[in-house]
Image (tube, rainbow, N blue to C red):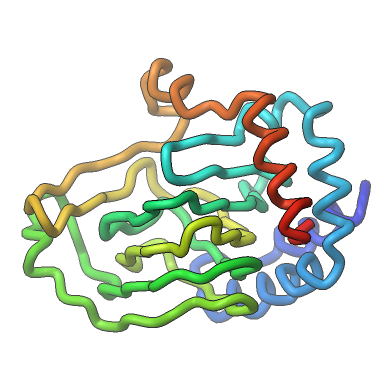
Length: 217
């Protein structure tokens, strides 16, 4: 068990439905990892030797996700998110509660509340209840029911701790087109979609090289 595993072990006792408990305990873990970047760098160096973790890493046109730790029971993961140029997302909720800390860059964060939503919702009528900047050093926690959206500065990096999934799907809403649709977790995705977002070893090497160049890890 290395230092990453010891930090993650303390996350197993969180009440993930109590967002105050999530914020307090995850902030402690996020601060520890941010204060000791060698812990994350050691995990990044080892990760290519661990095919199970590497298989969970994902690459999209405007976002890369690197899974640093995954615990099937209770289902906690620690991830790095690297936001690429042009990143924005549509209002959505999540399958799990999570906490995040900004390590590089910043993003504009829009919060719509914990609305009860389904695919019949009119996204245009979904009001922004809070808008805030999330600069370097900011941390926050969101309950899985919270609807939010992010517009990120290019090459923003965040450290994310997500809790166990409590539902099979989450809703994405497009305020420009008025459309809303469900997205599903990996186990319910078509194989072609899962393969399309799989991060190659070459991409992993490129992204981890950026993190070293930027002196993040």
